Image 1 (cartoon, rainbow over the protein chains, first blue to last red):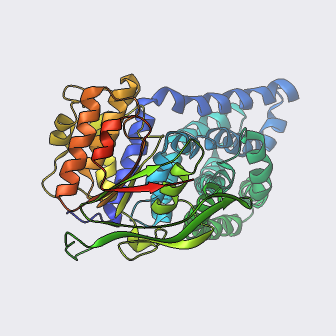
Image 2: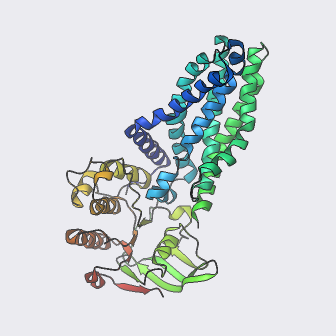
Length: 228
Length: 212
């Protein structure tokens, strides 16, 4: 028999999830459209005054992107759980954390990356000063994988429960408060001409920690959720 | 992963005093039985007697309340035992938007392939020639079952845990399951099967396990 390697398993899961996303590529546009519409509502609600909008632009883009990701997180494990392919992952010889890391990476590539590409547009709509855009993008590049990793953990805990959408938001958004504070802090520091590296470094540190711990914690959470 | 050759008569599955209770309500057991390579066990029991639960415990998805099970000498939940047993449950574990070939390729990437088995040959063997690249969503229930059976044939697992493998299958499909089981057993594999229908299957089983 050809022995299955950890690498082969990781590649197989990543390939499968990317292929599935490609088959339903229309769905990948939905979070982007959602973010676009939400960001459009703010000028309507607050008035088109440029100074006000440019002050809140970074925060609005950040929160909108995270909320758009929240909507797509429920689809991370639930379809696999419903059709039995999650069991196939659980019973595979590879470490479950590694296979889940492949799923989380696929999720980030298919939902966060389109949002990242759209965020300069959102920022421009809200009059964000162009000089600050690179800082906002850096904050988003660090914050969105954190959202995927922490979100996966919470989704893993709630996968066995019915109608878990609201529960997911209630459990995940408090965890995202520090991420929002540091990401928005970096942008507003840059906007005032202050040093902005420290909050970005904090985000980076949190991301490294989550990259190491979240897949393993996710595996443990899934085993708990399904052992019932 | 497992370089040891498997001698024909080696005990593949050892179940001792195995019992399961759901919220202190006993479901089955205690059970005692062995299954050696080359044997087929038939699990008999009424609806709700815990047939599926037993298979899920042996696969390592659930923990037994008491007693022990050993798959090739290892606890079912031991990571080293992963891949020895293969569970075919009511949910077939097929992605509806992928074709049969893509589903099998994913499974082979995770579990490896049986020696001398190719994906294309396996698809032909289960009678899905011409459906290899059709999304599973468009297949009939019986064809989906055949796609799941192709996974059994392709992966190198030595112990098959089959939950109602005959459901949704026509006569040719039932014959296919029996043929796959024959090949598996001839290769010193073992299988544990639950079934309601297919009375003719009773002659196939070398061992009966009654749940009550």
